Image 1: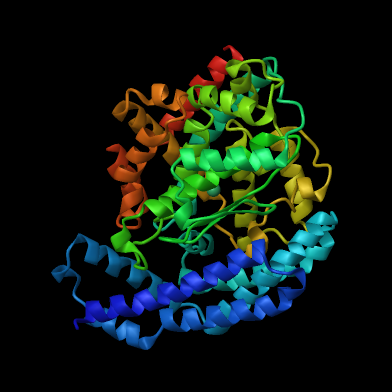
Image 2: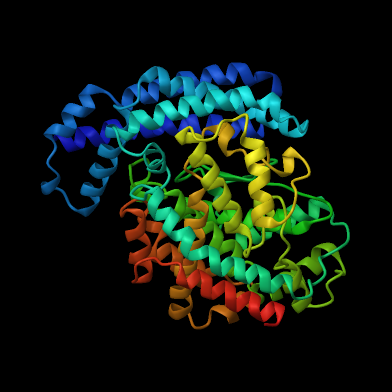
Length: 491
Ligand code: ZN
């Protein structure tokens, strides 16, 4: 066996163990009895210690030093690049820090959820302080004297920096704020009203998952408060939620998670349990969920099909025709909750989280001052006072999970989705005709062929460039949003 072959065999076993850790997390959020939280924290810390030891093992370092990338093909070189990146990261992190973070974030989830349910930020503050402290230690270990936040970003969006993210936000912000202002001046269309049987919501969401290409023989849907997607290759699971008065929460959360899942299911089978066998970054991942959810799922063409399917499942709707449903699905209303935000306001929610978490990691903002900083920023960006912590600083799970540097990938995903949609429309002139029949196979097939099947073969920006033929830019997203909402709101 060559050094490269030994590395690949070793890496495959590490990834299989990583998949087991991932399934423990899935179980924690979907099935685990509440009383098991402390024990699960120990289990997660133990498996994290094993994974960390494997990823940073001196034998792996020796093999990497012996391996010769020049003798490998494109796939081999990409695998080696990803394994080397993981090794270089792992050796910088002390094992005790890796398992302390795993334990703190596993316990943190339950404490955050309870604090959120009780509107009690002080109950979560000591846990968040511990997590921020450990994440600061992690960031400085990874940064090697460089910028700590940039070092954290590499876990979610390899190759990007806080400065690049700032530049992207600076290019988006003025036109998004202007668009929000113009929409505010126009009459708001009515929301969909009524009550919607939750079994019917789940039946319709399964139907939509299938329509968008989710393979149930290699996946399943469960219920959680916060929908998510978990797993790779032959086992990619999603979750959704229902609300009796708002069927869109269930339907569009499902389509969103299906976008993530189809990316994972769409990766070339030959890459399974290898360094290339998953989405390349969270930004590219989010581009798939967003284009499924928004550019395709919330398009006028697809909503025409959805209108008939909703009538079938729920009976007559308060929206009298497909145009009224389209307006209701794309209603622009500034609200507290990021996950419920419309396409116009969504990225403004991300910008404030980016600034706040960067200040937390830099030590410029303390956890004790966080609620006040959040509320002040929300007033300045949304002209509304936050009424309670669950509508403000306690709404998102990310910080309790130690996910600092993750938020900006949501906006990157929106930007990438804009680029992909522009290229897709050029490649598929019949797109709207197909979507109007509920047929997404042309669009999802194009995404699979140009992007999903390559997994982590190319770095994130190159992945988008390969699919679209152009370097990513904010222009297509802005043009799409201005055209769509200008038409909907009559300006
Ligand atoms: Zn997502």
